[in-house]
Length: 221
Image (cartoon, rainbow, N blue to C red; front, side):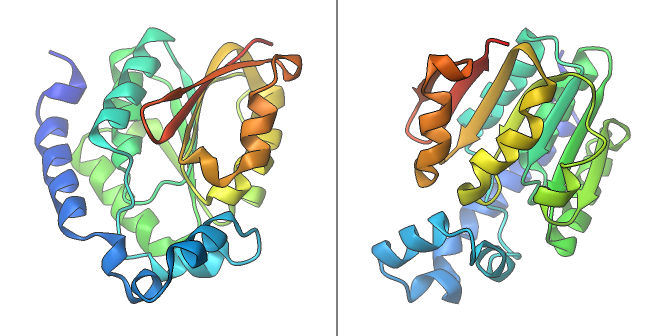
C-alpha cells in the first residue's frame, strides 16, 4: 500500500476534496459580481493578486483530483527528495507531494503561502495526514520567501499560487532545478510570459499541456 491510497491520507483527501467541491470560490462576493473579463484581468494582474487571494482566503482553491494524482506519480517517478511548492492553500496538493516524499524514503517539501489562515489550515491537514515532518511552511509573499535558502537541487516545482507570478517564481528557482526536474503549472494560461519561457527549448525546457488546466515541463539543464 502507498501512503496516498491508505489511511490516514486517503480518507483525509476525500473529505477535503468534497469540502472544496461544496464551497466554490465563484460563490464568493469577490468573484460573483465580476464579469468573465474582469476575473481574467484580476488573475493576470501583478498589482492586485494579494487583494484577490485575501478575499478568497476561506476557499481551498485546490488542484483537481487528477492533478493531485499526477503530482504524486511525478514525485515517485522522479524519486524526488526536494520539492518546492508555490501556493499552499489548504494543503491538498501538499499532501500529494509529501506522500510521494514519504514513499520515496523521505525528503523536504518547501511550500509558500501568504495567507496566515491558510497556512494554519494546511498545517493541521498535514499533521492529520502524518506528513508534517516532511514539510517546511513559509508564510509570506513567495517573491521573498522563495528567494532565500532553497535546496541546492530541486527535483519538482509546483506553481499553483498567484498565476501572474509564475515566471517570477520560476526565475527564483530555476538555477536550483536539477537536470530532468519537473515543473507543474496549474492554470498557466493566465501567465503568457511563463508559457512563452518554458515553451522555448532554447530556454532549456520541453513542455506540453496536460488536461485542460496544467502545463507540464521538464528542465533539461
